[in-house]
Picture 1 (cartoon, rainbow, N blue to C red):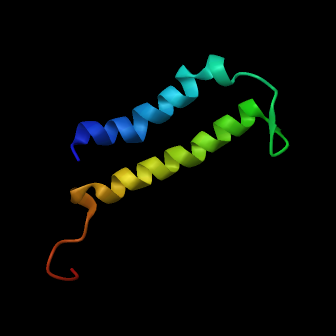
Picture 2: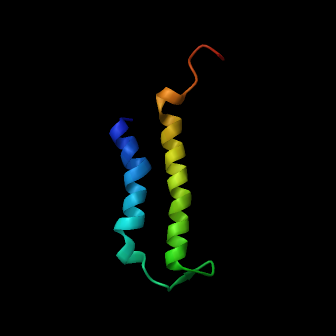
Amino acid sequence: MSSTWKVLIGLVVPFVAIVGLFPWYNRVTPLVLGFPFLYFWMFLWFVLTTLALYIVWRTDRRYQAPEGGEH
């Protein structure tokens, strides 16, 4: 995977989901798990952003263990 795709997955997609879609999710109803939809959406993207950055980090070759054993 190229570094451009990693930046898109790890940073741009969550940014657009939180900032770019704000007019869409800026409402109190419906309630999701007892929370207004606004809070639920933002909390969901905190978790999804962490997951996306973790996946990008794990797929980056610079941070993988070298071939041939432990160092």
